[in-house]
Image (cartoon, rainbow, N blue to C red; front, side, top):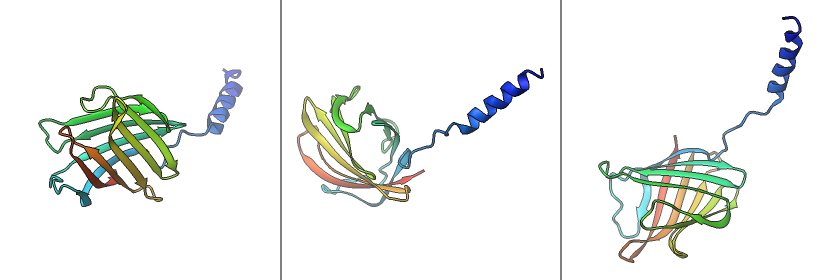
Length: 157
């Protein structure tokens, strides 16, 4: 037993010296806020509800969103990409089959959602420096081929 004490002390010291994996400033669940949000076609649902979970890593973004505006038919979106603008597969989506994410600043990312190289939606995210709010601005094309601009505000939960 007394031989294990020095080993235990070394192990505890090593663990204490290991930096903790800290959550990034933009990691977490971002919940849509109706106040300040708009769609240029005037059709932003009054009960619009979107939660976007973001997890950033070194040159990596894991994106998961759930739109429960229509709770009987939630719209789920998942992709994992690099942050250098490289095009990656966007699976399990009818409207998109490719995605590109580029970090354009410490508090800014651009997400392009594409179908066979054609940009269907361009999103430009700006996170507040305090990490509490974000704004997503963009232009998207509906399945009918009609485009609209949007600005959606989010709060980190």
